[in-house]
Image (cartoon, rainbow, N blue to C red; front, side, top):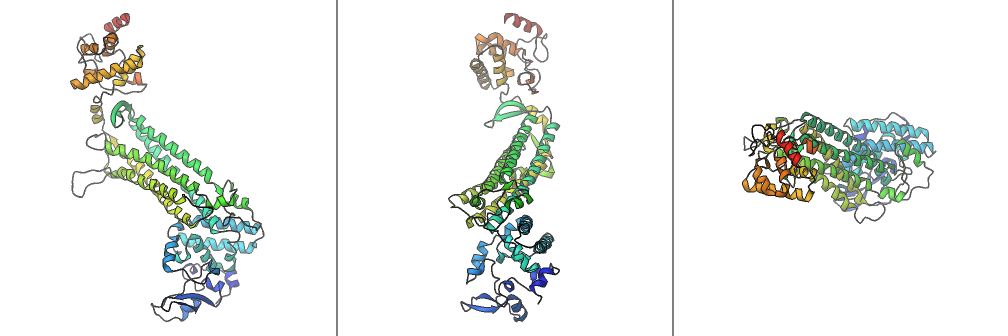
Length: 542
């Protein structure tokens, strides 16, 4: 058996990560370790793990002694298997391994700078952490639930690998400040990743809008037809929402970028550490000012989850709109086969499933936020084990929102709009009623009066089952005799109502020949319903 000194200074062997013959109890108790025998329901002293592995008969019924916890000094019993399974978090917090190693490097460098460990120990620790990181990334590292979490797994593996110097790494550090340092570093990277996906979706939407420049679609309020709008105007509204989503994440990143390392369990440490050194090394703005706040704060998690939830709601609304538009009842949107699915029983089906799932997964992200809100409710200061449950919801939220952004961009790149169907749908719903009211306002009619006239005109159309453009001059005169001249001029097309871009400041063509079918329009009238002689006459009267 090689000595601790030899293992501290010699060449590390990567294979020890998963099957070291020298386990941690050999460092804590060179000869014996405590094991628990279920059969006799009593404690018995057994030889250390390495000796047991070499001398025990090949009997699968014999239970191997449990490895002593790094915090096990004051305990006389091992935790039960049920407790161990229930309290482990390494199954998910191993996602933090890269940031845990990053934090440990910065901490070791600071300890050496402050004279709390020697430079040679620092270098050995660096080398061991490098080997562990390579092992994890190569998929060779064995994560052990009995070592509870990512921090203990890495520290125990480092101890197996380099021996005594690894025991110095946790100087002036608690898992309380360690995990929050890791988590904030992870959140920083996750936000950058989400921002990249938001930008990609924004580009996809702008490209979609550009491809459909000038296409007019019905605009809706209360899911009822309201006013004509440009499709590009509608699509770009989602780009604006995404821009606010991005700004929220940027703000969140600014607020979370403070370093808790050095707060230890809750009260800091009496050792001469340099918190500014570790903060700078890890790219934080500054150390957190209050150690109790540092280890208990989860505002950054809640804010991140909230930002993701708002983004998810925006994507859900876009998904709902596109799902509706892809239906036979609307028929405005045609997704390609590349972003559609079929039915196991109905051969004709072509479903916009990706956007349905975007709509559905928004509930999951909102649920992640609610989980952590309820988790933090009523917790006393400072750290409580409840807070272990903050990671899975955020990991899930980030993974889900990235998937939603990615598939929405894919969908936007693989859809076309049915121009013919959209144009045929425009006359229905009296989309030009507001334009009529606005026209009368421009002619000096009080808005409430013009609103009433337009409303009465729509009511007349509803009773006659026709559109505003179908009303005759006599019908228009009967609506409000006091505004007779103005209504006649509107009927004759003086506001160029065939193209509502002049009144709405955007190109929204509602159809040809508004006044073509109206009574009283003779051959001298233009095809768009205009009449120069009548226009001049009306202007003289007006």
